[in-house]
Image 1 (tube, rainbow, N blue to C red):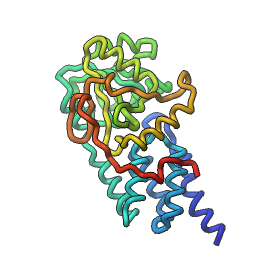
Image 2 (cartoon, rainbow, N blue to C red):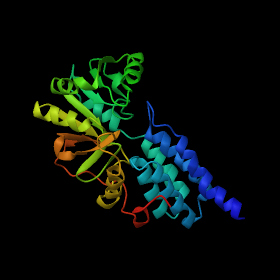
Image 3 (cartoon, rainbow, N blue to C red):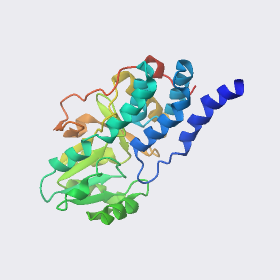
Image 4 (cartoon, one colour):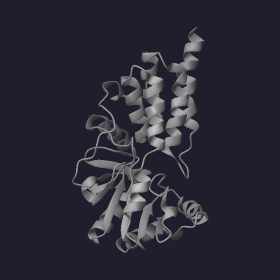
Length: 273
């Protein structure tokens, strides 16, 4: 019996270690994989809490995992809550709202490989995308976009300042956000500052399931602060450093408070059990 319990608790969550973060990383796919991994624990509340903590310790910067964990732990029907949430992610309109809000003939700059912000950009053949290399993924993203008919300019990280200062819109993507800041690929803060200083619009895409309440986001901040900020792949960017947020409902000025996609959950205030 002990071996079965151990297998149910540990093995499914260890599967999540093998979900790659490399080019094209997609939080919806990661969350779907997580829901499948947790499936053996539905109906076992104590085991489910520990499993969610372990999951978040492996992927502390994935906002959708935090929201799914909060939803399944508060629900009387964890399985339904998890898969209903995945359906919500699959119908998130953030990508469509970006495409419909961009001005005609715009040149936009992006950092890294955003899995959400550019999902629908091929529908705007008038848009030129400047891909600023981060993680060494720039060339891969550029190829993927060009295969879909998107006009692309590849920009090395050294060209970040000029690329953002001379683009019409700088678009950043939050992997997870809180009330006053968000996490994005390193280089995003510099991109935001350069864009704002040059009086360009700087948008941050905060997709459905990526906006946390203050206390949960503080745990994310703590996890990020454990890394050497000079070498980390991700960084905090203040919302005051962008002009607009774009999410499932619309594009709005950044002064408008972000929504909260889940409730505070005391059980998730510590993880790694």
